[in-house]
Length: 242
Length: 242
DNA sequence: CCTACCGATCGGTAGG
DNA sequence: CCTACCGATCGGTAGG
Image (tube, rainbow over all chains, first blue to last red; front, side):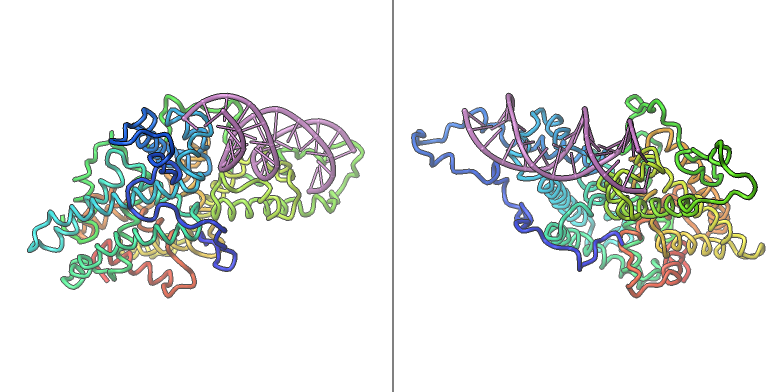
């Protein structure tokens, strides 16, 4: 119901998902041939001021967009709002991104790439002979960090603005979320076989993700709950052990 | 983070939450003195055609709004879209509602009122001497019905468009959601004391609601899962019993 | 409830 | 990256 029916969903003409490859930022709108322009001095390319912080300005746009998309929603956050948040004038975000939608995609893509990396690191920190429950604890704890930790605007945007993506973009993000979610399954299956998780692992994963993801709606970092405490509570709820 | 800070949150001048009282629909924009207008025949008020289906037109606006707010989001759904969905021309929804925002409020308020009523009926159907787990089953099953059953656009809108309400409106809706949620607590406490629910009941309620609410993101009525099946899985996950 | 209209705002662009 | 601009669309209203 919340996804448009396949029949009516068409892919825009030039809507190939931008920035799918996790390669270094391609510079403003792909225009990167400055060094080969005529009349430019050879040798070590002395960067202009405007080039020096070019990556920084782009960063500011992305971070401002993430924050505004999260607090106001994609449709309600104007590109002017985003420009102001990045210290720019109205039209300047379009120097870095070809459309508001492409900016949304980059926010989600960067968020998921970082979440996946953080999750992999968390799993690597768990001893190979650890109990499945400890592996689940690490996954839950990292997920809370990604959702609620400092600078955590990107993933909430991904969770709550999925419908604002077009089909090609959804496919790109799905690849990332699919890999992220798949890393939970061996642990959930092990717990299920050990009798510590009674629900079917596939359905359990959906419910567990829902329980955790929903915390962005009610968690306050100024409240009494710590992320470690929340993790322990979640573990108790799902595996019946305090 | 997703709620505006109290300092910057101001209540609009005339923004008293419309339609708080669950009394019968007050007719177009509160104008209901037609029967007392001069020159009108006495006796049984013979209704004009336009009056006959006045409630129906209003209904159509509300239901179209609920569907569009759900599928496109509040900001992205235009009042023109809603008018068209109700078979009207562009400006006509404003004959029934003073603003797009007031329409959102009515959708949420009607959704919650109906959900609360449905939940009460579900609880009334549980025998007084039933085990707490059976009470929880009834609550979960009803919640799935409210979220995923036929005509279930209203509650998802409430869940995902909270930020589009102003402060006065939030207060009005909070009263309804608070009562709805409170009905879960005795059951959760009983399960906790019996050792069937390991997490703290307050936190457990937040996680459980998250797990259930998130199902609107992935559930498909054309899939293999029935709402009864989902309920059994959720019960197994939370209370460790199949 | 429709017709016709209004000011405001929006995403996006040309040209420098 | 700014200035200045564009067409489109939006929520909302007057007047019937």
